[in-house]
Length: 104
Image (tube, rainbow, N blue to C red; front, side, top):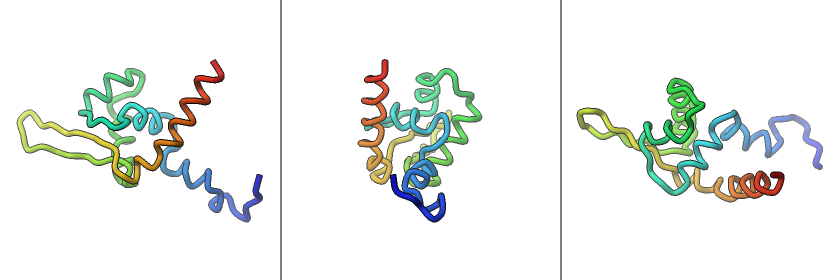
C-alpha cells in the first residue's frame, strides 16, 4: 500500500467521494445501461426511503454521474440514466459484484 501525505490524496477516498455511502453503488448497479424512472428505481430498492433516494439521486446528478431528464407532462415524469462519466465506474461495480459473489 502507498502512503499518502493527506487522506484527500488517496485515490480510494476520491472514488468514495463520488460513490460512497449505503445506496449510491446500488443505484448505479440497478441502473446499469438502462434508463429508469424514479418509481422503478424505488421499487428495486424497497429498503430505501423516497427522501433518501431523492437525495442520493440529486448527489449523483450533481457529481455528473447520472443524467436526470424531466418531461413536461402531467403527471410529471423523470428518468435517470448513467452519464459517460458514470459509465467509467462500470469496471469498479463489476469487480464489486464479482467479489460479492465469491464470498458467498
